[in-house]
Amino acid sequence: MTKIKPGQFVIGSFFASDNTCPNCQFGYQSSCQHREFVGGAQAPMLRVPLAEGTLVATSDVPSKDLIPSFQAVSDVMGTGWFAADAANVKQGSTVVVVGDGAVGLLAVLSAKQMGAERIIAMSRHESRQKIAREFGATDIVAERGDAGVARVMELTRGVGAHSVLECVGTQESMAQAIRCARRGGYVSYVGVPHGVDLKGEELFYAHVHLHGGPAPVRRFLPKLIDLVWSGNINPGKVFDLTLPLDQVAEGYRAMGRAPRD
Image (cartoon, rainbow, N blue to C red; front, side, top):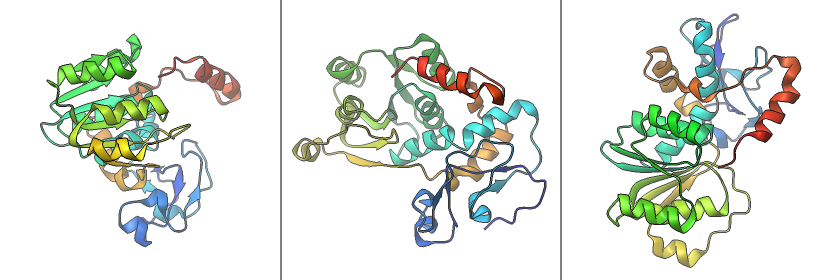
């Protein structure tokens, strides 16, 4: 439990948790037995249930230039980190990241922080490819479906990746992720599934470890906060538009116009 004092700068997540129940203690605060959906912890003021279990206070009030990175930590960075953690990314491993949205790009950054030697980012968008490279991607694969899998297999000499991070949530992206993994490899999925139907027999013979779900961001907050404070990561780079509160509607329109994975 964290004792929160008035005036402290705090960081939370999209799920409130008591951080004491068996699920929380096991590291899955987003499945807390008393969880409540907060819906975003990126506001100047917010009523947070179970605040002492949900929020982590920073050592000081951050400078303005660090705010975007701390906003990312509360959501997309925490989710990208879980993607890498759930896919068992290790020092020297080969990683494939499926999806180049904010979560996918920060999954690349997370894999780099965890010591991956080769990171293959599947991206079709030049601006996002550039960020992926900055975050540590060693290879870019623009192809999708069968062609994308074939390209990954070519890059890995027909073996596949140790870890594949699925950050989209579609049928195609999930199938692509599973097929890009080596036998005995790990596939994480953090993209909210929509229309995903896994075939048991195909999964059985794929011989992969499959793990994912809503990211338990609270588990990773102390580590991620330290990485931002120390300057080791700058996840705020994924944000490319800033608007005042009275232009929220335009912000949603801009999201709608953004290129899709």
